[in-house]
Image 1: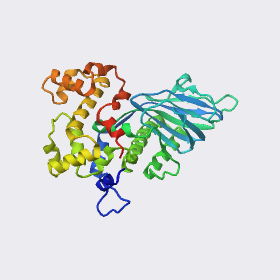
Image 2: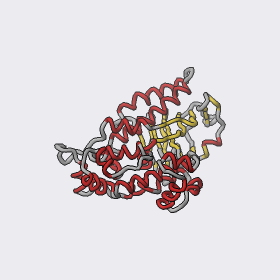
Image 3: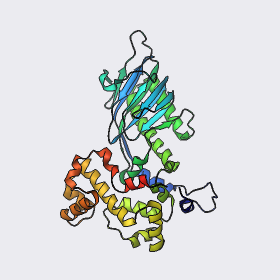
Image 4: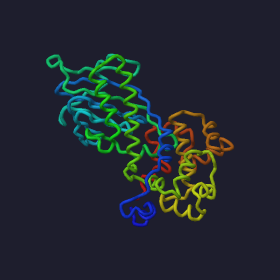
Length: 349
């Protein structure tokens, strides 16, 4: 981060160490639109030697909780994380990975093991060998639909692995939830499967909230903008009402600053003019609605405030380089490679 940008994001009176914190109102706005819903969960019992492979789930997120024992998480790029009982993992990008008893253990696809239904969304998998029926490790894991609504850009800026350590130094409020999960996993009381599914969704949401509260690890120009009170209200307005064709004057009024101050601050912090950001945000959302939600082009055009499908199609092709229909062939996981999110991720702040 440049010295000039430090001065833009520092809170008055904070000295060298402080920056504008994300306000409670802003956090509420970011988290109100968050949707986390478990699609499929498993309670897994394993013996002393195990290797489980989890395929990539584009557009979804993985959640793991190790209730008993120890394990190794190996990610797609070969990074290894040591896990102990009480650790929880949230993987917002749904990348392929492995859970192993040791770093050199071969892995077998989790879907290849027999599963016994416990509830509508939860099943049990027991891979303990007959010679060692008592499990050496017990997991509760699964994948979720994960959507931050109009602030979906933040999910693309999250790290591949978000690990909650056993001491809970970063997420102290999460420890009681994980303690309850461990109790439900181990006791297997009546209705435990449904309770575990709900607790997993709460735990994942709290991990996301903790990451946002900690400043999103200072990962992008978007975070710098959200910390700047002269920009945050405009950014929120753009994401709340992407179909409104904003003017610079209207956006400046949202922040109670002059047009010139707002335009200069936006350009300096984010790296592109505000109206360009607004246009590229519309096209990013359009691409997601076309590819993920399979909305008709006419519906997307109306949602984004275009007077005709032809006008929308021209704008979409001008920004993305291809017609709207081609977006249906683009995987959802690649949607953030375009528009303002790409620019924010590349921006050196």
